[in-house]
Length: 176
Image (tube, rainbow, N blue to C red; front, side):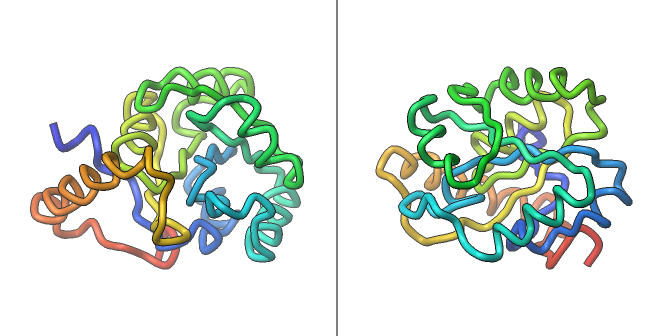
């Protein structure tokens, strides 16, 4: 049961994962949750660190696609200034959104990583889709109220994962 929620990697911040590390792992595309992963849920413009990381991915030929459970209208508004492709209403923890994006790019499962700040949705969806996952810490300490139950469950599951998998630790990147 716990394996459904076990991330491949736990990285404090997605901006610490370099295109070189991704390439070394055979990853050719990054799929990412939106709120509290790429951008703070209350700051749709993102940060200079996000823009720099996006530029590095782009220069390396690694596409970044947002996979979100939010409505098309919400995701379009939030990603407008970032000029990112997206899949809305992804139904995470189901794998539909991830699988659709992966097939659209013509990539194999081992060539994709899903990044997110929640075990219950992002990591579970990645595991169901059979792709790599990176759990990141939320960008800010507050969430929209609809996320509170998931965050509570995430904390419980993270404690159980730490006991069962003591080598699963927060890292600075994929190899550090």
